[in-house]
Image (tube, rainbow, N blue to C red; front, side, top):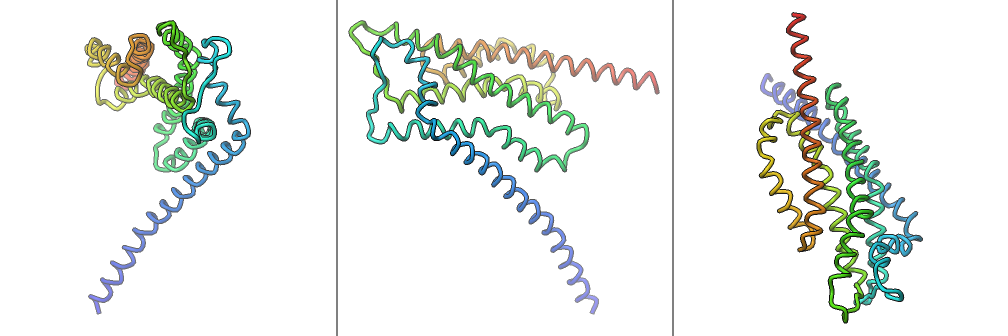
Amino acid sequence: MSGSSDKQKTGRQGVGAQAPLIEHLIELRSRLMRAVIAIVVIFLALYPFANGIYSFVAEPLMALLPEGSQMIATEVASPFLAPFKLTLVVAVFIAVPVVLHQAWAFVAPGLYDNEKTLAIPLLVSSVGLFYAGAAFAYYVVFPLLFSFFTQTGPDNITVMTDINQYLNFVLKLFFAFGVAFEIPIATFLLILSGATTVASLGSKRPYILLGCFVVGMVLTPPDVVSQSLLAVPMYLLYEIGLLFGRLVGNRRARERADDSSAG
């Protein structure tokens, strides 16, 4: 009888352990569905303007081409697929705050109050920095980069860019600059978590600068202009991350000193 009772207790404990996991999985599915629905709704709202959105993204290059020039489509489906793909990417881009809100709502119950206080500014800052990186690419990098490309070619060559190739090119740069602008957040989190220190990162400045140019070489077209346009902001953002890490470190040192003096 005692053996049967023990088995029943073990069974109830197993069911109790599985219940929270199932509830978490159900909530995760619900959060994912809300994020996907937000993306789909934004996409459907934007799709009637797909061609206009593509024209806006193509403007930095079109403004530098000779009068009467235009892009071409070398594939049968490109006139449809290129604006469709761009609109979907823009929908995801716009829906990032909603997606992050759903992720935050899922993990927030398991965080301490001090972690919640820190996480919200970091989430908002990361979204803002990603948008800033994409805007920097469009308004600063693209005009300089396309001006360089269109003026360095032979005089007897007419620039007629394929719309799909152009889209792949600019999306790669949008993503590269968006991620690069997250460097202050990454640097700050490394310092905050104790994985490294401001002094340690500061002593590695030459290697970080070299690494920025290597990343710029990998993520951008093979020319010095585009590599520098990515590498220099990356390094400056790294210095900003060090600055915030130093400020937080100084504040914590003052708090520890106050606590020790009060004790």
